[in-house]
Length: 373
Image (cartoon, rainbow, N blue to C red):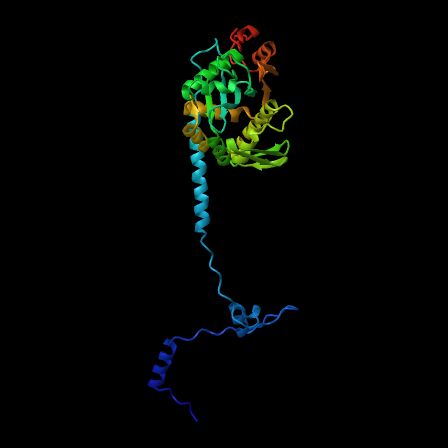
């Protein structure tokens, strides 16, 4: 049978079939060989892994924890930075403002960057200066020294009891009393100190507490009661951290010492040296500005804030590791039935000229007039 001739309709169908979009050819499915020990997961297994169920016993994985925004920590860090900047700015200002104290009655030509300050502490009633220390600063040489002036030191006074510790009250206390005390000190050491700092007991205790206390070795058990002075001392021997009140007890105690006031003077000097060493360390430096403000507000002094800055910076610069201390040379004596400490002029002049003289002028025994001659 002859073949059928295609119709026109068939030709049109063929043309449209060619123009229709054809689906892309499907690639031949291949299965990659699986290495030994590796499991083959299906679609459901992969979904479980994605959801974490494979690691949590089929249970859904816990929601991811949101990271905490440590706002408090950032605030505290910022506050610390601000505090450090304040201390830095305050330190720079102190350096710029610092001014060495100078007496208006100099002995002669002064050694460069040398000054002396009389530091006094009063008793409970604020009448007697029972603690007296001469602070010597030689900034160029990096030297700090403390000279103790015993309270019972005999001086040229017309009172019934001519002791150094009574000069302040006997001459009107206040500025007049301290001005008179500086004159008596000049008779003992050959020159007038560049300034003074008079601290009462309340300020002393507050200063110790503000600086965080002082670690000190108490040399013996200290027990003493004096209701008349409202003084009640109770300290145990040994190294310990002393607060303001305990430090005051240590500074005032003397009844149990074999050498009485002389041994108390030595302990006072050692305590001050220890306090200076601890307070000028890194931990104490942050408290220094507050301590200076306390001293400038609550102590009697002829030193300006700029003078106090110079003294504080000098102590930091010199350091206290090699701080030397001495007692005014002399010996206990009974004079007219009273107990006194009598200065040895020759020995005192030799010590002062060698270690406590801020002037180029030599100091000799002839320059000392503790008894008015």
